[in-house]
Image (cartoon, rainbow, N blue to C red; front, top):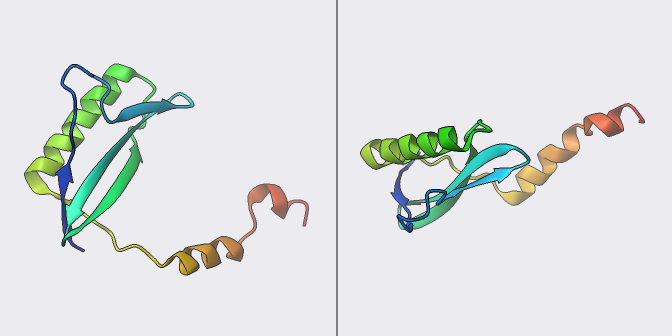
Length: 96
C-alpha cells in the first residue's frame, strides 16, 4: 500500500477546522496525497465531546505528518455494489 501525505489548509482562528458533529459523534475529514493522486478520508473520532474531538484530530494530524498514512487500494465500484447484494439488510432479512 502506498504511503499518503497529509494535505490540509486551515484557518488558525477556526478551532473546528476539518471536524463536524454528525448525530452526536464528531468526525474528521482530510486529504492524503500519494503517487500523484489524492484520496479524501472521512473517519469518526468516536467521541461526543468537542474538546476531545479537537485533541484527537490534532494527534491524528501530527501522527500523519510524522509517519504518513497507508492508503488502502480502492475496490472497483462494481465489486463494492456486488458485495451489498450478498446479504440483505437486517431490517429486510426478517421480512424475507
